[in-house]
Image (cartoon, rainbow, N blue to C red; front, side, top):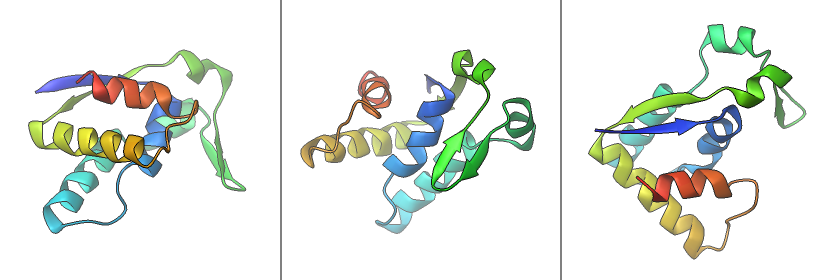
Length: 106
């Protein structure tokens, strides 16, 4: 098991970065990742996380918040595959670069 530490922004981006379709086993792992890294009701209230008009917002205090998650080898493999396919498709942006770099360092 390894840990990854993410910001609120990276957690929000992860949802869009992960594959939305694929094999059954891959999608089970994706579901587990989304459940693990998703926002809890408590976090949503504490950081005033809102989703409107296709954008997610949060209060300024959340910008410095860091969240650590333990990852299984299977989850790491899916994340690394996601990073590689995003790179191969040349879909790396300044918006998702920090998350991609964290995934690649696992």
